[in-house]
Length: 183
Image 1 (cartoon, helix red, strand yellow):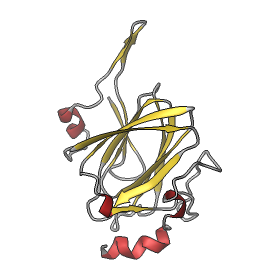
Image 2 (cartoon, helix red, strand yellow; image 1 turned 90 degrees about the vertical axis):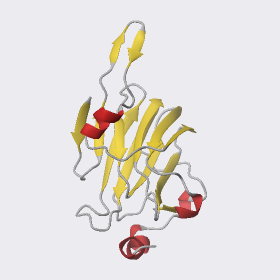
Image 3 (spheres, one colour; image 1 turned 120 degrees about the horizontal axis):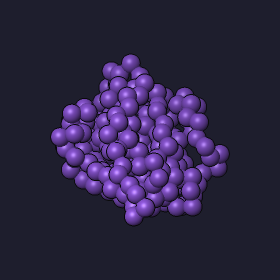
């Protein structure tokens, strides 16, 4: 696999080695020793899968006191995926990285604990799959407003389909003190 470091420490783009011919393809979606050698050291404890329709935007989500690392990929469709650094002591705090994940390119995005995460669907539907380093806890969830100007994310949609919760999330300025001083 090809591991690409981003401008934000610990945030990685992974291009798996795909073996294919006229019959189809094969690739490893995860192999513990290989991923640990690439710097992805936390253990994964939960796998999730979702399907969303075109123009849906989910996020930007995070857990406040039990942050989850995520290894994300798209198995069908096209997704614009975003991670925002919320680690208080990080020199890239508040900065983001984005990547195009598709069923065709099979790219994976490793988002370590301490990041907000979100994506928008560019195809008719998209199947999104991810491994998590901690269990989801609905009482611990937090979120950032997807179009907060302070984040400067250039989403490829101007009028996404949002959940009621995602349409009223907090801005980075509104949660900065909680992130720095603890929830």
